[in-house]
Length: 131
Image 1 (tube, rainbow, N blue to C red):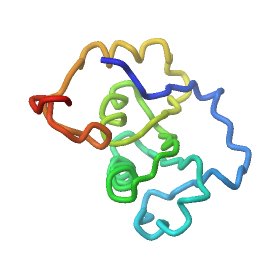
Image 2: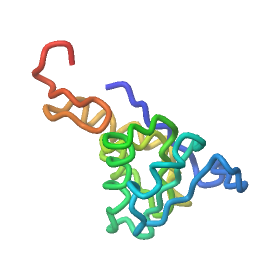
Image 3: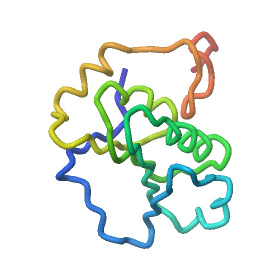
Image 4: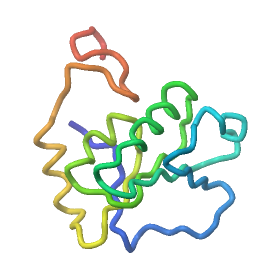
């Protein structure tokens, strides 16, 4: 499987107040921001705790329903175990929790090389010709 999720170490994530970067709160409805997406290059979705999965739903809505093609970045309590699911729900980058080694992340992608179901990016199931 070719990993398309860009993985950043905590110290490599820059939040400089760029107006083309939107920080979306966990309880915000992505459908409510549809009108301003044309000017946005990156949306940061936060995982306040690894057990709080609302950002997965937000990413999926942004990719599938709203057709957002920019960078959707996972921030906060991001663990290696979550990376494959993040990619499948529409995230394009993830900032690992401080102290987590980014070089260990490839193991997760090697472990789960293919899926039968479609996902946020590759919508056709594995068994459909041309998918």
